[in-house]
Image 1 (cartoon, helix red, strand yellow):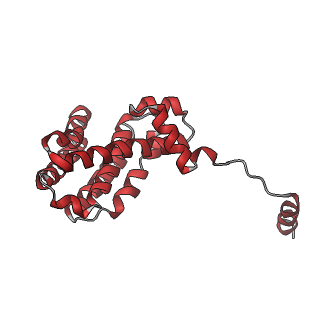
Image 2 (cartoon, rainbow, N blue to C red; image 1 turned 90 degrees about the vertical axis):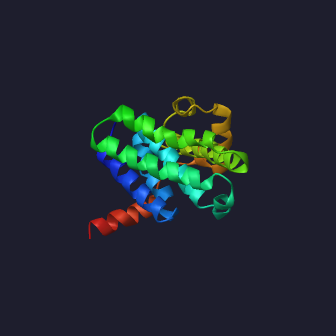
Image 3 (cartoon, rainbow, N blue to C red; image 1 turned 30 degrees about the vertical axis):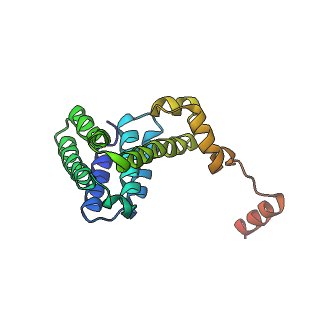
Length: 185
């Protein structure tokens, strides 16, 4: 596990946000792990996807009225607490098992809520994959890292314009000359 302290901090803040019914900081917390995830660290990828998904799920008040919500919410809190303790104890394998339990908790839910949450997790995987691709990792490698299809990733990247980002914009000659003149005054 890379950046253990960062993951611990993110999970503690995620738990706090969930317990206080505040999904707002969860997207930003998820984004904080993307750089490490772009190095291929599976733990950071897992944290990015699940924290982002939790944020999306909690931001939908209509989900709370569906059957199975209370059970799912309790599983999130319990799994986060266990995962935090696992990291503090240095038990990476138990962390992965406990943290993945959040995603597996979908199987304990029935009806519309299950379908909605499955959709959120799928879209979160694609969204985070596109952010990893934005960090310079190839589409193929990113798709393999997250277990999604290249087609889904290409389609999403095309919609967001990520594939068209230009990193090599240059300053025109006049602006450069003005900058140099100011520099040597």
